[in-house]
Length: 273
Length: 80
Image 1: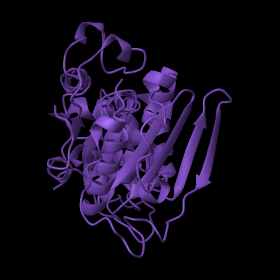
Image 2: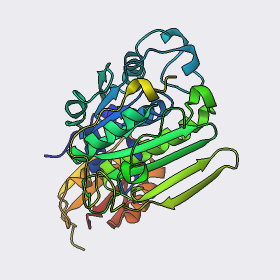
Image 3: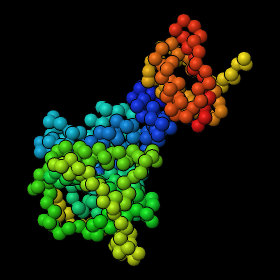
Image 4: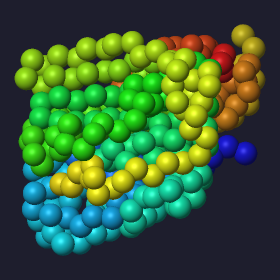
């Protein structure tokens, strides 16, 4: 038995249904899909906004922070009246108001070795929009162990980066540790609090993350696997460089040394916005 | 001329573009290849747009006919 759309859903998703690559069947896939977004910040905001608009049926959000005035230059899910409120709560309010079809699951907690597998395990796709290396490595390793596709983006100053690691196909896909074997020493990479960030860069890269997630769910197009997209806002240029699987990668290489989750010291390289 | 045998009929009187196509497509998706859908329309632009979009999707438009005052039928065979 095929999915029965309500009149409101037919209207809401009509631009999707018209697309030959999506149709009613694709929309049904979206409504049945589950996407987890790590961080309801500069990247997570636009990603979550579009995922909810697209009708992704279950959206999880992980964040333990509260909305601050300094977030509002780019974190478009939140607003002035929500300052002081937990970000996941603010995000949930915005998304549910946009689309009541979406079940928003708020994970108002810091992600750590003890909860990461449990949080991620029920989702189909994970988007990383976190702001610190310990989280990025932990989320990567957890997705790798759970065979979940991970769409990873990062932003700083006028630059953004994006790639997709498809851990459903580990033979083909490089992993985050092929790119960065381990976290950089504290202080080497500045935080956006130190270095600044043009807000719209988060909008562009987060939106591209949502695009990757939708393609993965719909199984259309080419995911950005084995490729790193680099966006330069000042030159308005996109460049794509090849990412290769590293045979010596500590996680996915020929002789992996990482066989369980590692929690890096949050204090030493925590980046807070 | 023999009548085309129709498997499903969809009355879209009162509907306008693009929902005439959207609703036709949703029904067609539930049908089997080879089956035939008759769509009843009373919105003139849809009489052009529904067959056009159906053809773009690779479906076969068998017939477009005016059956009354401001009333049309579009008959489509599902190809894929």
